Image (cartoon, rainbow, N blue to C red; front, top):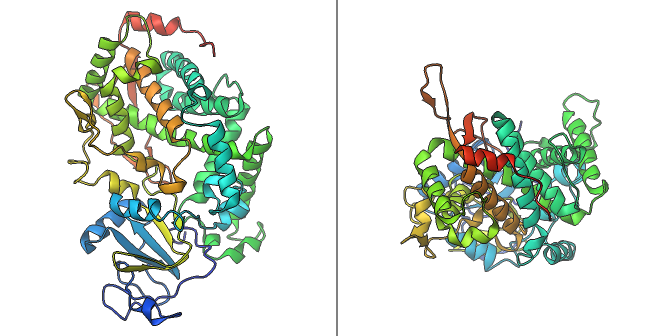
Length: 484
């Protein structure tokens, strides 16, 4: 696997000369001397022709980029992947300036040969280049899934959350499967009105297969064809062309996801299902590892809820600790630690540094959500950082960067947050989550390891899930499908 940071289908690769200014690397003066006098953002020393390609990390790269930024004392850093200009944005301040205030030129996407051409995801508007086609798709999405129109999604979320509660009672050891069912089934119901009855439903299988292809084909540095697009013409039977076989399978799944019987615009919601699953699994991990936080959330639920009733969305305003818990789940282990990269469409300048047209510009979400100035003791799991005097503290920044930046922020983030909130509230109201025990009865805490990927999931772990009381168990057993 070639360690390329991002798919590199940039139409006009930028040439660099790293020998001019030690430690900074000036842009080669191909157009005018004024541009040549401005340095690129600081970054690791570049090699002629290859740039930083041999220095690029292949796992947990967001942590490396944050470290480089600290060492270079800059909130943006520059890398060169064999001719492709890459800018990593490590701070909220820089992200706001570039992705928000200059969104007119920082809202496009790079072209990936694997993702767009071979794997068949050219209709997913989250990965479309900025332009009229993208604007139309986004407009249609927002019209139907407007944040104020909660009836579009909340009834389905409530229904499938309660179905998941019953599944957890029957087979708690399969909690990851049940949470994936909850996210996938409710998303397909919201998007297409399809009722999903179990984990082996064919519609759910099609969606999951398509999402596997999306995550893999969009992952940074996975396929050489993104660096050398001409390889797309290599036939699948040739040695080393296994990517063609994978692409063919993923393309078929992506096509099925649209044609059985769906509209392309709505695929953005289905992609949100995988990020929601990642957050749900992080919730289960955190509750297993931090029982004192679980107890505080359950004490609040017990104070607010009427005995024998499950939480609904109407209870949210009365449950500030639970809302803070959801925010901390999103912040602690960012679901997309390195945001889907943008592409700048014209030459620009930030803090005296030159940013060339065509550069890949990626927001380091992990760095922003672990900024010690914003979130002291950032590696600790602490929902109370979002609270003050028992209420949500408006002075603490919400972890919304987890959903992207500027005009390319995830349009379905309100649905993902809503689904996560009702899941957390429902599970904690009736279940207790504890570590597994060894043969001597001692608790075995999970490792808290995560699998590096475009979407960050915890490594599989075990925990015990049991009803909090006999009354809670009877409530779960009595649940029927909630009428919409």
